[in-house]
Image 1 (tube, helix red, strand yellow):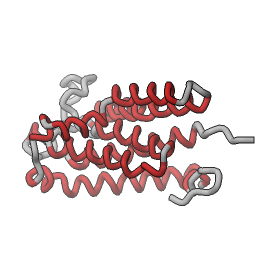
Image 2 (cartoon, rainbow, N blue to C red):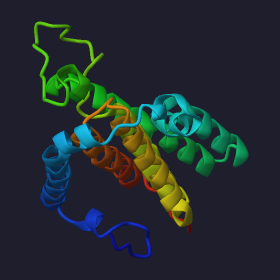
Image 3 (cartoon, rainbow, N blue to C red):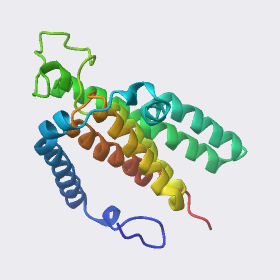
Image 4 (cartoon, rainbow, N blue to C red):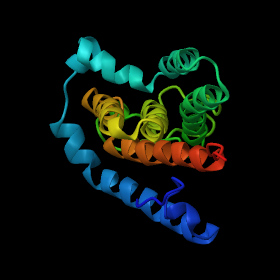
Length: 211
C-alpha cells in the first residue's frame, strides 16, 4: 500500500466502513483461494520430514509465542530500555500474542478439524464434543497467525528487511501444510488475519511524532 510522509498508509486514512469492506474482501479472497485448492494440495503436497529436520523446526517456531517473547525482551534490552524500545517490545509481543488468542477463539467457533481426521475431507466437531478444547481443531492455523502477527510488526520496525520476516512467516505456513497439520485454507486465513492484527496494532498505537 502507498504511504505518506507520516508513515500511515492510504488504507488508514479511509472511513471505517471502507476499511472494513476492504479488510473483509481481502480475507474472503484469501480464504476462498485456499478452499478451492485444499483437496489437491493435501493429496499432492506432503513432506513429513518437515516435522523432524532442523529447517522444518526453524519454520515452525516462527509460530511459537515464546520465540517472540524472547525477541521482544532482546529488543528492549538492546535499545537500552528507552520509551521507543518499550513501545516496540510491547508491540512485538502483543501482535503475535493477540493473533494467537484470536486464532484459538475462532477455532472454538468454526470447529473444523485437522485434515488427517477425514483424509483430506472437511470434518467439523460437534458442540457436544469438548466444547472448550481447541485440540485437534485447525481453522485458522494459530502457528501461522502468530508468525504473521510478528512478521508484520517487524516489517514496520525494519522495512528494508521485511522480505526476511514475511519469508519466515510463509515458511511457517508451508511447514504446517507440508506436514498435513493444516489445510491450505487454514494457513491462508491465518496469514491474512495475523497480518491484519499487526497492522491494526501499528495504526492504533503509532510512534510519537517528533517535535
